[in-house]
Image (cartoon, rainbow, N blue to C red):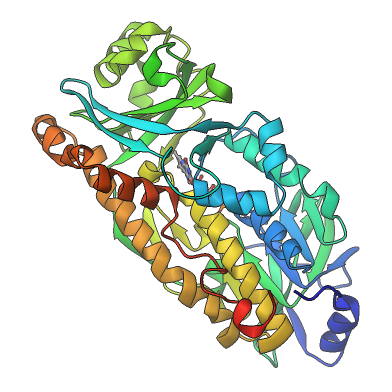
Amino acid sequence: MESSRPDVTAYVQAIFKPMAIKRISMGRGAVHDGRAELQWEAEVLIAGGAVGGASMAHALAEYDLSSVLLERTPRVAEINRGDVIQPLSLQLLDRWGISPHIEEMGGFPLFEWNFYNPRIGHLATWDFSNIPGKFNHQTILRHRQIHEALYAAMDAKQDRINAQRGATVTGVLFDDEAEVVVGLVGQQDGVDFEARGRVVVAADGARSRLRSYLGIEQEERYIYDHEYLMLTTPRPKVPEMDRKGLQYVGRHGLTVLIPLDGGEEIRIPVQIPAGSLAEWRDISAAELRHRLLLRAPVLKHVDTDAAMDKLSHTYPVGWRHSHEYVKQHVCLIGEAAHTVHPTTAQGMNMAILDAEMLAAVIKRCIAVDGVSDESLKRYERARRPVAERVMETSHHQTLHHTACGIWHDIWGARLYRWDQDEEVKKEISIEIAGLNNPTSKDLKILEEVGLA
Ligand SMILES: Cc1cc2nc3c(=O)[nH]c(=O)nc-3n(C[C@H](O)[C@H](O)[C@H](O)COP(=O)(O)OP(=O)(O)OC[C@H]3O[C@@H](n4cnc5c(N)ncnc54)[C@H](O)[C@@H]3O)c2cc1C
């Protein structure tokens, strides 16, 4: 691996002097046309600093590449999203030095998920304790704390990661001659900024403005008729929930019980028909309890009165895949590139894997191949088919897990027959763990050009 860092300033000055650079707004508002008060530069610019963007910055730092990370929210907020880190992602986070922070914030290992039908009983198990590799478990941590762990680990990497919070990207710097994006512009606390770099990463989520600006279309292959209430209750102190997660599938759809913070509270995504949040908000505590016990009988052991108190919104779900991941030197990662149904807890993990692969490809482009859409598309070729497979697998799980109605009770027992077969059980656990997804090391992205 190369150790001497290239002189970014010299490079950026060299490419910027002679070129015709335009500032283009990505939204309705105009962008500043003079010199911005805040100026940053790095090899890579990252728009969006949630799990995808922050992982990207760490993955780049591992290869000694500098980045400016631009996140519009001023601080890490409480957010109802993925709390489950899969074993392959744990390996990557470990490589980037995030593991001690995850542990410090209370991340705890989960070795098993059990599936139940509320009427039939136990259906199946995902068991991670026998999978290969350093991490034979998932780790559960509140999504906010996963962000915090990623940011805490940046303190030791300030020479490579310039993290800017409260910085909203509103436009791009476009090189008219080369027809590529060479920078990002926006505002931080009312002050204009301009950031310049060689590659731009769009980690700005499902509604990515950069993706829209580039005109990259998405396929919406499946449309779901439901969304999720995200409830919180105390953890039922029963053996079935001791360091284990529970998923109830049945005639009312899917109800997931995720132990948080080592197990004192649980997060409960409850499947409801799309658009029915208002009706749920109106029901009495007794009716809420009745509905929850129908879906997840184990909740009889806990008080459910406050279950809705921390609910701010429902979570709509979707299946959307961008036709391209790379255009005009902008590379899409995470939900900017793909949105998957959360049943198999893959979304955040796909973002982490995208970051790992893209960082290696960028390293290779800068050191050997040269930066061009063609060379950056090595990332798209490596990741898009894998993401497609994971999204299809998740969709098929979704069909089983979220089917409603009486037939589900009958199918339930049949669908989960794989539980009887130890080999099939192991295969499914490995797939969910992400261990079938190649990393840049498996594909020898850097090794084959002598950079590892
Ligand atoms: C109910 C539910 C449960 C889930 N459970 C799991 C799970 O257990 N495991 C799992 O792996 N995944 C799970 N997921 C999916 C996972 O949470 C997401 O896929 C993942 O967090 C996406 O990360 P991201 O960084 O790509 O996008 P986001 O989290 O959407 O982040 C985008 C970021 O970009 C910022 N941004 C946007 N526009 C701009 C701009 N113009 N300028 C600057 N910043 C900008 C936003 O503020 C935001 O911080 C779940 C999702 C849901 C809905």
